[in-house]
Image (cartoon, rainbow, N blue to C red; front, side, top):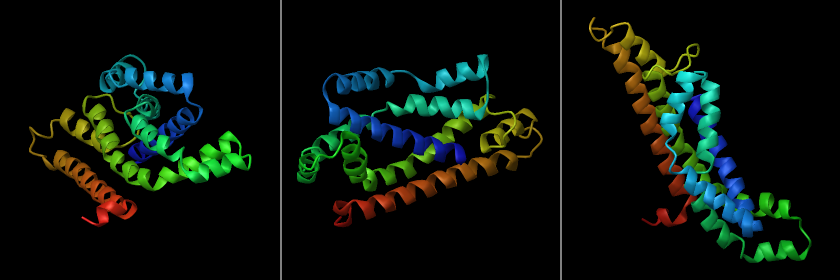
Length: 203
């Protein structure tokens, strides 16, 4: 769970900041960010994590860092960029320019807070995806050998012959908990989306 929470928060906050900076400064900086995003989206993450876990280290913190680095320049940057392009033209941004607010002040105190209500449901919805990613690595035998995770429980149970010995609950219980957590986070994300998005309240 901590893996999913940290990865979701780190990825979303970094993507939001990069998108805001790119939109505000525009030009070459924005173009470079978009090209990096497009290249990054065709790079398969899971095979890279498998390669690192096999050849270098299976530390969960190393995997977490790689997940955040490769997920920062995801398709969410383009979504944030489209919204920031609209925010940049709002009247209060022009007012901030008029009284001499610095670029960093405008970006971090006027532009980014504008999107936070829309981003929070997305953060909640991302958590299960990262939890399942860590579990997938653990089931493949590439999970952290020290820290206990649901994926490691399933991997250890399978390696110790739980299925052949009739101890199905060693696999069913962590798998069920992962599914329940995924459904729970999805429901919380949908609820927050309806709260922060007034258009959905009318449906």
